[in-house]
Image 1 (tube, rainbow, N blue to C red):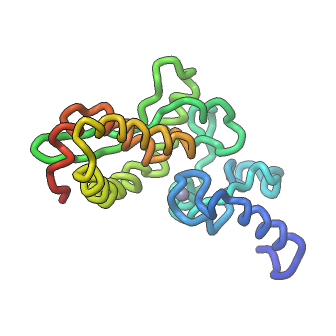
Image 2 (cartoon, rainbow, N blue to C red; image 1 turned 180 degrees about the vertical axis):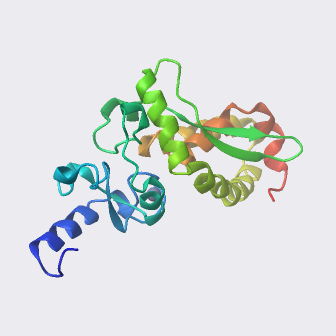
Image 3 (cartoon, rainbow, N blue to C red; image 1 turned 90 degrees about the vertical axis):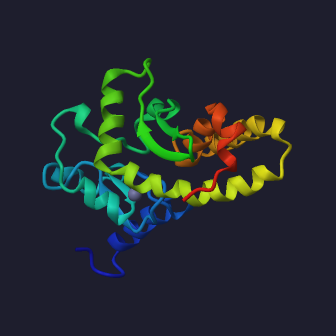
Length: 201
Ligand SMILES: [Zn+2]
């Protein structure tokens, strides 16, 4: 425990304040209100206060990661700052089920050209942090809002609109749930022609 008003507390607050948009660096969704030891301090005490080992996260991600001590590279979740080119790959996908009405589920789908260790870590990251459970419920309000917008567009412009939305979100982060959702919708001929007309429940 770091006493209040100590330089250690200032240091922690400084690291927390660097979270992009105040969001968790692991899921991108929850509020960054704690610092996660990427490698647990019980197993790696010398790394406990190394800034690179302290990542602003939400309490859920921090809890799900717990005190897992990865024994191999494959067993590590992704590090938001240091895994470099892992973040250049598109690995989050959304499956669009339907008819009769659209149903969305998110999946970790490492691309075939991703190095196997990274692919294993992407899958580990997605399952350990329970990202499907976090992202799946986001799709409902987004689809309802999108359906209203698409009803105002000429039908022939809908596929291009979905592709643009996918590209705009990918600029933020190619593996955010919104980018994955719009990529999936843009690839679904059924959604662009019929699916968007169906109510989402
Ligand atoms: Zn999180």
